[in-house]
Length: 152
Ligand code: FES
Image: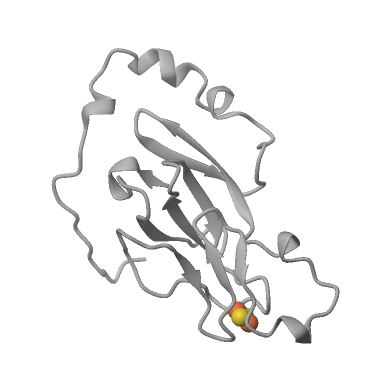
């Protein structure tokens, strides 16, 4: 999914596009310092909650359709038209989470949510031992290159 370098401080987030799954994911560091990942889909009608990236000091995410607002931990914090939704419990209407794991500062997600059907340790398997003691955890991006190319 990415690298912890991309969201080093609480309130930071980046938007990740996962074409193989056909989804967008918000990778965010909460005020408690935890990394979390949420589908970029509002619980109301599926609008994108995040449209711009990145940010370093967000306090939450607000959908631009009818203003449903979520905190950095995915909880629905503001429902502007609450009287129109009698009986709805905001606790049931947070952003949907993916499972997040970090290894050597690389961030992994599993679309099934927490707990994932296979742990990150099991999924990495022998790779962990093969690179143990190496410099992976000390690596930092030195440049970001983006290009559009006509290829087959
Ligand atoms: S789709 Fe987000 S507030 Fe309606």
